[in-house]
Amino acid sequence: MRRKHISARSATGAIGLLLGLIGNAAAEDYYRPTKGYRVEPAPDTPPYVRNLSKTQFEQFRNVEWLDVGLDFRSRYEYRENDYRPVGANNSGVYRPDPDNIWLLRTRAFLGVKDILDPLRFVMELEDARSYNGLYSRTDADVNEFEMIQGYAELYFANALGHNRPISIRAGRQHLELLDRRLVGNNEFRNTTNNFEGYRVRFGKKQNNWDLDTFVFQPVDRLKYDFDQPDEDTWFYGAVFSWKQWSDYVTIQPYFLGKHVDGDPRNPINANRKADADIYSPGLRVYGLFWDSGFDFDADITKQFGHQGRLTGTNRNNYSQIVEQHDALAYSLELGYTFDHDWKPRASLYYGYGTGDKTGGDRTNQRFDAFYGFNQPWSRNDYYSWDNIHAPKARLEFTPYKDVRIDTGYNAYWLESDAGGWRRAGLGNGNGKTFMGHEFDIRLRHKLNAFVDWSLSYAHYTPGDYTTSLARTNGPFTNEPSNFFYFEVSLNAFGDGKPKYH
Image 1 (cartoon, rainbow, N blue to C red):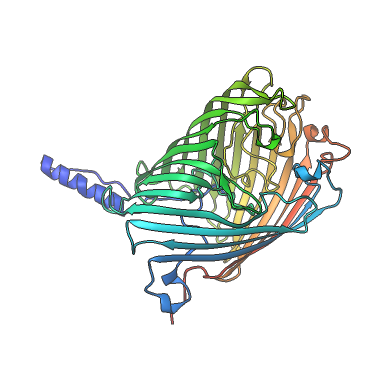
Image 2 (tube, rainbow, N blue to C red):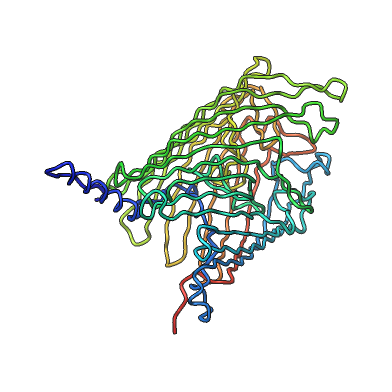
């Protein structure tokens, strides 16, 4: 058990014991990852990074102050009848032929720690490219020769007590918080979400509590030029994680906010943006139901504030209508892990996010998913946490060592038919709400310390809302869509478990 009962005969003894418990709490590892499907945040240091002393190069066994990483990922995607909107350069013209696209991504990482403490440095570079696609390249697939992280850090290892640090970072960073549905790197995508600004963390995830705070400007990805921060937008927040309340449960109250200084009269349509101030307090709780085999992951957040809605068709009448923002979202996953050699886990999930009810009531109810990771919603990447009812059933198991398989069935309804299906670019208000259902299956295999590969297939069947909005020139939403991919990842420094001779 983590907690101990304090019994002392004197105030001095009680104080001494309390200080001892605080010290022990800081030294002990309290962190427990969630068992929820694809919602565990990536570690602070990217997963492909290794400490140089733990690589296959024995001559660097004593170089513990340098973290290094070099990773290459190649993915072939086959998409048949993709519903997602095509790039602007194609003028909305869909192609009836399947899309066969190759996505290539190379990342390199250098991190200096310990040797100059409290001063530390991190730099991470990325080169993301796509080939053979039917449509124009987008910043979801292409970001050539880019620095996705470059920051300095002041790290005070024992500022709040033994092994309880304060970390202050400034510069370009990427970030994953909570269950990744609101803030994520979008690791599956070929390019990465990142931000410029400041992050201050009190404690670390292994402590019995920690507080993560930040104020950032999101970085605009420019396919062939150096990325620039969006100087009109600020994204800020705080997440408190309490892990000592129970051996089985982690509690995370949080607050996120977004401020946008709009430019509704910009003569360039692509640069027009509306004002916004959105506040999003919430609570996430996850963990286990004791030793029963059952687990859960729940998140709820309320949004309020205001945001503008752009109006006008030419620069002479550009303007905005300021609307109240009033939205709600929640998410609940329940799972059970069977006592079997294959470690099978079955889970049920339900996600809900409000959508806008009508365009004329001066209130916007569409939930803003900020910078969230969409893969937990749909393997096809068709959905995010807005205007949705989404039940799901899933099974995960490990039939052989280093082989993992998961399969699931998902169904989707609009929360508001007037709000439409934004990620498919489909319109609103025809009285129907059933968007469709999706089956997916994925296999992942760690071939050796340096090579991982995976393949996946997803089949999406449209519902009555979707089929009713099919167009003769696409998207052809009266037909199902198919998505298959095969992916290989190469890590130059292995799994960090060298075989010593």
